[in-house]
Length: 251
Ligand code: KIV
Image 1 (cartoon, rainbow, N blue to C red):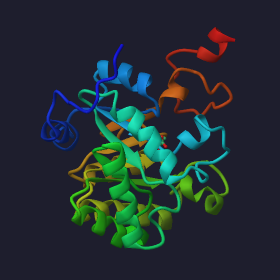
Image 2 (cartoon, protein in one colour):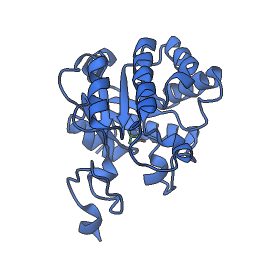
Image 3 (cartoon, rainbow, N blue to C red):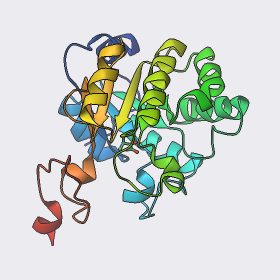
């Protein structure tokens, strides 16, 4: 099969509408990092493909997502973009490419958009990255937020367990979600937070929330394709629904 270049059947506007205006319906988002997996997902009508920095773990075998570089993210995003006809493709800005100052954040986001052809970027954090988010949005680049267990801060958290169980952290998360919406983000990933907090945040926003490990109340859910297909057999969080067990079947 030929890869399809960048000639989308659907316009960017149509894709944008699917993800931003359809809060009432559940939308699907899956993470992948290569061309042929993206071809399958696109044909299966997945709404949003996330080229996440979890590629650092599942593609390169690192323990965390910190080592992956901007160039490597662009390579993965470029491979996915060339495969798709219809899905909206969101790409993670990797650790170190946007936290230091807003100008660097914008330069990194522009590189992703220009060199991969992606449609939007995703960043982790709230108030602390406000100026960077503003600057990227001001350049016309759609931004998705990511709150809760933000894996780029794993060495601050020290564990991948549920965040925002305490009132102070939960309150900050609620404020950050409202801030990201006010700044103009088109959606927010909520990772590993209590289900009642996912519900409260989702109800307080007009933009969609996409959950992972945060219960059923987010507007959509995201999973990583390697986890969903059972390739990462040693990764067994409670929230993960495996649809296959490729590790066993191929082994
Ligand atoms: O990197 C990634 O794929 C992600 C999802 C797990 C939300 O950020």
